[in-house]
Image 1 (tube, rainbow, N blue to C red):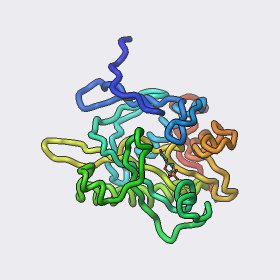
Image 2: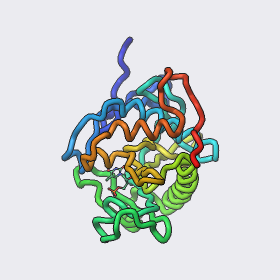
Image 3: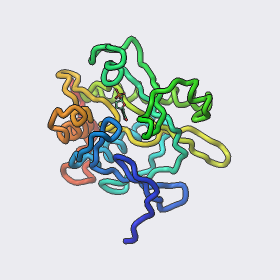
Length: 254
Ligand code: TMP
């Protein structure tokens, strides 16, 4: 089979030209990086699980009216998505103190925040994705005030919905990172969720034990990294065990 044209290779994914205009194929690799690629590794099976987990979460979000770039999963490692103009902002939503928030502000990891906090980072590997304020984003034209309003409204809905969905399977959604894109349809532009939602860009802790089930296992050398990703998929009822078409619903936890 002729290989599709590769458009972009990132740290965890590759984008290929899609079968129709306005579409792309997103390929999920097993490669993992941390600390702006200073730490590199492979998490066996991560690509398959993230493809599946992101598909599941994006479909559930579409059901509640959150627009996303997702069209459909093509195979174990690939999904078809709409081609969007990526807004160069990584939006982090936090519910519980962890990671860079704890380091920067001295708030102990695990402390519930008084309310959800949104942070912006400028998506630029050379600069190490620096944190920026709304003022930088609008002044430099990375996004308009209207774009940002739409992004924040979507992020808060995503947070509410995913916090509940994960809690239902015994997982705390500590924080996560979202990316957005502009989708043009007949001269009309709308902001849609892009990239992926997976244990690569969420912190997910077991609600009872606090055990980490996300990429922090890799970042912090905690071991049993693959098991963390598998456990998230298993709880969501989407672990590809008995074959790819074995799609179960989430398993309710007491
Ligand atoms: P942080 O505490 O390191 O700032 O991370 C906050 C959240 O954002 C966490 O869920 C991991 C995610 N994240 C990414 O997806 N990509 C990144 O490059 C970084 C630094 C964090």
